[in-house]
Length: 102
Image (cartoon, rainbow, N blue to C red; front, side, top):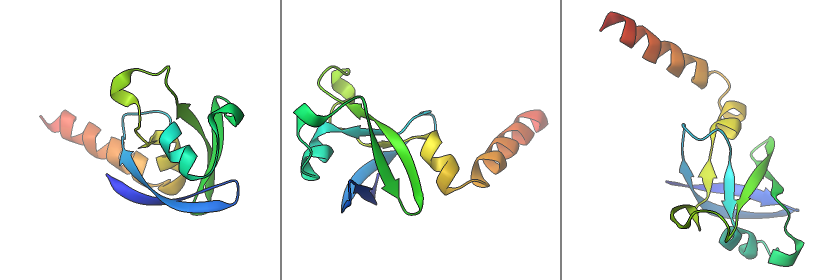
């Protein structure tokens, strides 16, 4: 869990986010969007978020998602690949080499 500076529609806030390397997508909760002044009525399935110099379309976790995911903000592999383009191949290579040696 980490605090991440996120910009949505020109407003920047620090949002607590879970870093999930196994998640293919980035998700943001309705609770976080409300802090940006975005009402539920104006929300569609995705919202464009900016983290540093990288922008991505995050999937919104609304009241229809499983209860164990409600309220979570998750940095997924899509954003991680943009933020750390070299780290993903290094990790995969490292894991694959370890498995070959076992």
